[in-house]
Image 1 (cartoon, rainbow, N blue to C red):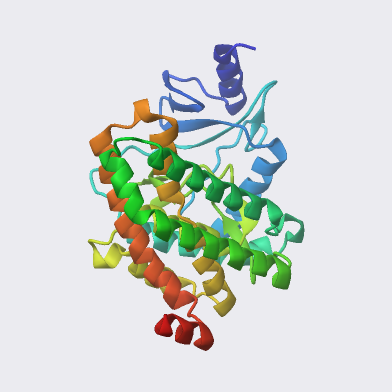
Image 2 (cartoon, rainbow, N blue to C red; image 1 turned 90 degrees about the vertical axis):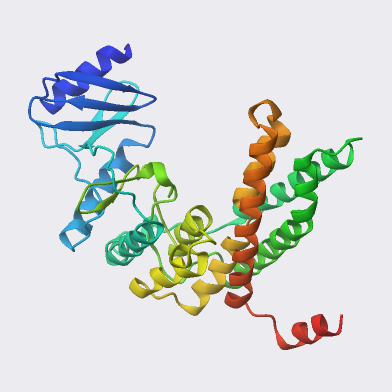
Length: 335
C-alpha cells in the first residue's frame, strides 16, 4: 500500500476530511476544518500503543497534565493499524514564542514519574529489570573510547579537536569504569531490580516536548518503559543541564525534581551510575571520528569543550551521590 493510500485510509478511520496534510518521516500535520492534528506513524507494536493510551488515560484521571489525549476513531479506537504501520493522533501544538525552561521540563518529568507509579504497579509484567545487556553496551563504549584514543595518537599532526579530547579522555575513562563497576555490583546485589518503577519516557529531548501558553506536554512515548525514574532523570540532566544558570544547573535540576519526587537512597546511588556514563561526550567523539565530513572542526571543538564543562560539573554531583568509603578516602588523601 502506497503511503498516500495509507494516509487516506487512516484519515477515513478517524472520520476526517482534511483540508491539508503536510509532513514527513512519520509525523504529519493534518489540518481539519475545525482543528489541527498531529498524526504519528509509529514503529511501536499495536498492543504497546493501546496499553500506553490506557496508562496515560489513567494518569490523566489522577491529575497528570503533561500528556496530550489520543484521538479516537469512529470505532472508539486510539490506534489505527494498517498493513504496514500503526498510527495515532494527538492535538497539534504550534511553536510558541515563549521558551520552555529546563526546570519546567524536569518538574513535568517528576510529575510524570510520581503519578505513573501507582498505575505501573498494576502491571507487574511490564517491569524492566536491568541485565547484562546494559553492561555489554557500556563495555563496548569503553572499547570505542580506546579506538578514538588510538585514532588521536596515530595522527602526525593532532587537530584542535584531538587536543581537546586529550584533556578529557582520562576523566571519561575513569567515569565509564566507575559506571561499569557500579552497575555490575547492582546486578549482583539487586539482580537488576530497581527500588521502584514508573513510566519512563526514555527519549527525553527538546524535540519531544511541546507547549502552549498554559502547559508543557511530553510526546512520542513510543519507546517508554516501566523502569527506574533515575533513567529519565539522568538523561534530562545530561541534555538540559546548564552550568551557566544556577536554576538549570545539573544540581539545580536534581533539586527541582526532588521537590516533587524525593529519591530513595538506593536510587541516588543508581542515579550516580547513570550520570557517570558520558553519553553526550561519546556521541560527539563518534560523530567526529566516524563521520568527519559531517563535523566542522570549530563547531566540533566548541561542542566538546562545552560538554566537557558540563561533564565535570556532573562528576561533582556523582561524588556527592556516591561518597567514597573512609578507607578509599584515606587512600586518595595519601596518594
